[in-house]
Image (cartoon, rainbow, N blue to C red; front, side, top):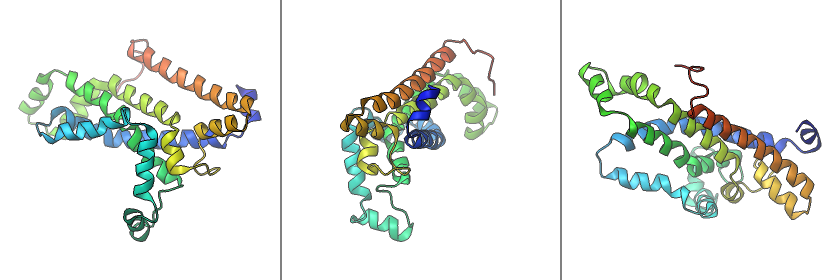
Length: 231
């Protein structure tokens, strides 16, 4: 592995992990309240929201990337508004990759956390309500500590999924070195150029790291690290 790292351009790898870290952190912050609402809300709108959240699981990534490209295009009304009022361009920029990754990886963060909330006994919230605790206090000190495995699963799956993105990042970001050229794009370009050895080096790194992350997740959920981390 050390030899491989010395022989390839590390730029796409660093950009990939930077994108995965930022996407995971932002989705972790946004995903908890969204998952909480989906789990406990009685609004009929939750079925529509849940459907929208789940759509990236079944839609081809290029479809999502295409519509994001159209929506954020500098020639479109929304793209013009973003640039004029927020000084923000999302097409062929790293910021655009972050937005696209958040949308594409949303179900991988929200669904495990929602499942964790749903699996909790109802008497936990009822007891907290009887004690006069606010919903925020109940969430922070009662619910979240009891779904640690779901939170860990959501974070690891989101991170790993972001690392493997291709269609969305290609459509909205293209391949600009040190800006939008992530590892999956680098692999594709090396294969197109018949540089199979370099493509294999990139692929091997992503394969090993993803395998280790999922292995640690499974070991953790299997109780091998029980008691090593506490809130």
